[in-house]
Picture 1 (tube, rainbow, N blue to C red):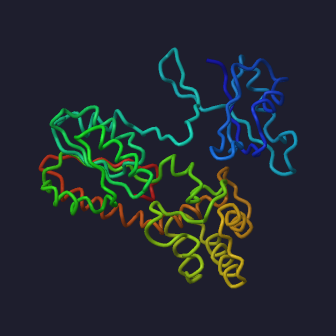
Picture 2: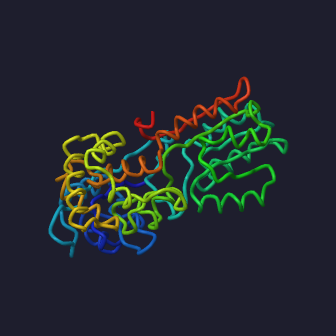
Length: 349
């Protein structure tokens, strides 16, 4: 299995060959260096893994933490730590892995199926967050021919994928609506009070993060938009141009940017840039503005990440939609039906 180290804070110019040369004096490497790359321009997105043949070599690699990648501009060096190891069996271990760009691996899929679907394979089900259909396809694989599945999503790209699945499987139907509307939609289908299970995988999916046309990642250049559905509502840039400074501070604090001092600084900076007519329209420029206003971040994540999250949650009404979705789920479920929620953030509860 080898001994793996995790690399972060890598510069965009980092590549596999350069990192292999950087660590070759530590000891024998097993396999290739693995990097997470930007699917648009191929640049390094800041993280990677290196596997060594011996524990001693991995320890020497960790001692290089703080070193500057050759050719990188002055600033923070790379961070090297032992990769997190999960015991899969007594004899085997799971290694860090990279997900292909544009794909999404459904979380806790088998657990979801076991609790939600397997007890009633003939039932009607709802996947309120279709995404790219990971959980949806898994649910369909466990349904009988009598079973039915309705899915909801706001993302036009997701709807396109869902329409293709509709043509492939007559048991499935996709709806271009928020999941909070499931009761209204399913009432028209005659399914109110007849659903066996509702599943909501809350938050944002990997393909949405990888896409540059909505600006979800501060590290990637794109329009400062942040909408799940580009055909509805106002973009983040339009919001920032018009929102009151105190209201913006409140939006940031309530939706993720818990540091009130940082939220005030960011809101002040936005107000100044709006007044001067210099408010950034692109994600990287806006992220840089946030970093200057907020100051150095002690955490490893990008300093503007929580600001982007707060704006995204507000623009898409994510917390309000969760409340509507829970209420709608209990309207459509039959007696004894099951409702499952998957979330990675305590703020979603």
